[in-house]
Image (tube, rainbow, N blue to C red; front, side, top):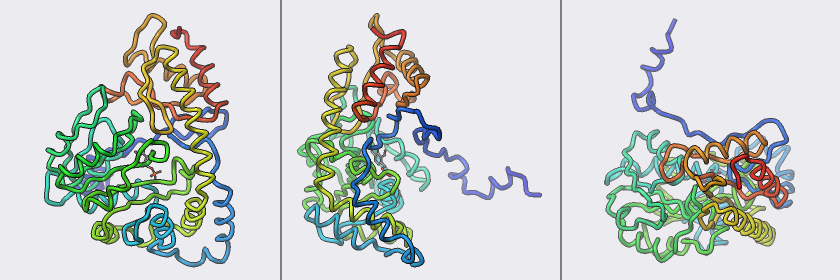
Length: 366
Ligand SMILES: Cc1ncc(COP(=O)(O)O)c(C=O)c1O
């Protein structure tokens, strides 16, 4: 009989040493206040369920449109782009994966990203057996334009606004980076609808800029798995060559078109989340907790004890207290710039009140 170790030996060496991405917890039972994975607390546009219902039944017999052409067109129209400047993926994670697959092994020194940012990036690069170049942020979280440009990577993955901090970057800064960096600059705009500015206009001005978006956050469709990349047709063509032929299923394509069409619903939901965010941000600061100004649907805040202590032990203790109260937030203990903090998704007003009550009951709180 083949032993597991022999099976391991049959895998490529870089696959043997891979560590999979750790997603946030998705509890199975009810009763949780779930503020850990930046989902939208509100349901998607009702038009999405109508469109998906129409698609159910006989149509499921047939493969979906391999190009997701109608979805590409809908997204392109919204952003003043041509259809051949857009690709659709099974979530933006899929699109990021295609970018790494296409460009990680190209001319340059591998794939660069700033730290801390979205923790999936190194995993995607490891899957391709690519080299990584990590460029550190400082606690101020300003964009290290020159260091990123100097990375000489073939691909640069930049989250804007950043995660897990929520800090937004000025388009003018991103434009400086687009001018100075010689590789493909990917601006991951998963949270752009909650931000003051976005970089979509750079796609038409700079041939090596790609902007990615998702329906998972502002549109409340994390479960549908639809994401986008916008770039020059030459870039999109390369991504199409490395994509699964049917990477977006029929129901997701139908739902995506409906969601993109309901711009009024999107604006209402985003406005509600921003109001709740402002109140929660003020609440943390009133407790004396340092909190980065957020341009996303989450807050990155540094718990502080009544006697003024902060640090990894304090943040971890706060996380565990909240967990015991069935309030789920995210703690990233592995990086010096994240381990004093908690990342907390903006929920409904009622969920944020439950969070406040749970914090009030923390024995170390003021
Ligand atoms: C910065 C960033 N990019 C991309 C994603 C992935 O989004 P999707 O659900 O579209 O795969 C996330 C999800 O948390 C994210 O935080």
